[in-house]
Image (cartoon, rainbow, N blue to C red; front, side):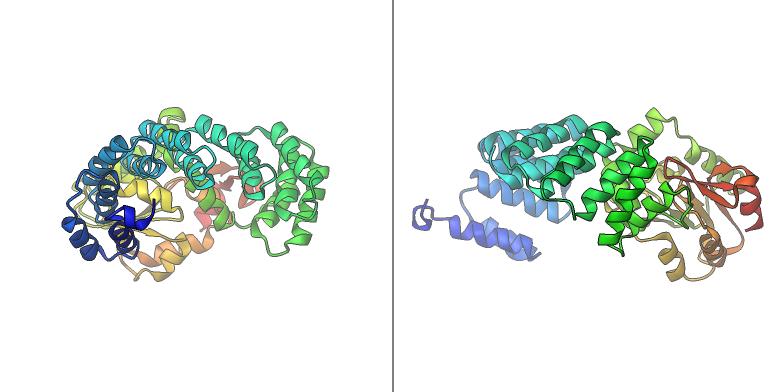
Length: 399
């Protein structure tokens, strides 16, 4: 359609740009001036503006109308899917993304969005389906091939992942450190340690500053690095956010937050205290605590985890930050309590963290944290095959 054939096309582009540039008052004014209120594009922009302004329910209502008015418009379905996902309507979000793909089978951005939505929703079946379709549509595309290989590894399909990475090596990817490193990890996990170490060494030689490859190589050699690279932890939990609570509480029967709250209430029955929740994740601790008569500050590396925590509307503030940076930037004596539930399993040497926590605690304050336990003969900490750290009781008591 030529611009002259559509009297509001230019205005729609201007409103879309205003929302993208956060000129919300201008976008609202221009939307109000349009008389085509039932146009699917107008409805979509109203939904996007409402979402940008924090009105999730208003956004959902407008985007539902837009998607209904133009069911074959991929953007309407994808934007509806993202809003549904933000409101934890995960199954419906995946369905909306699927409708977007059905309307635009050959659109790479729509397919990428569907993969991301399925991943955030924790729907691995839909995620794999879209990845496989993308591989068939755009064969030998490095970004797609890498995403599929990483997905297979995350699902513990190591034999299939090994074949996948070996095929990539055979298709002119012999110098790619990501391919070499991931093949090395697959081999190590399957017990082919010597061969796996060889590929990890090749990967590190081609990318000497890669902290994740170095960590995997050290682990394969039976060593215990001081901690997991923060990028590795962040990627793990960004991908885990959509299914974290269901898996941890429902599947693994995770009870650490409940036990911590019991300890806290024994010390402070009225919960009149300021609390720092390190590695707050999706905010499970806040859910168990409820509203405290003080501040509840959450810190986590994963932006997607923090998005989940924000929905509880319990935390005073949430910060995407490494825990050591957060402690370093916190004023001494800021909190009566610091919580670190299932956090130090990703940190080997916790001496700096313990000292930082002590510095920001008030006199008489407490720190409550969990660890996986190592035997005293294993040293202060040891990296398990699960890539989680265990700490000896003696070393922690010494700290």
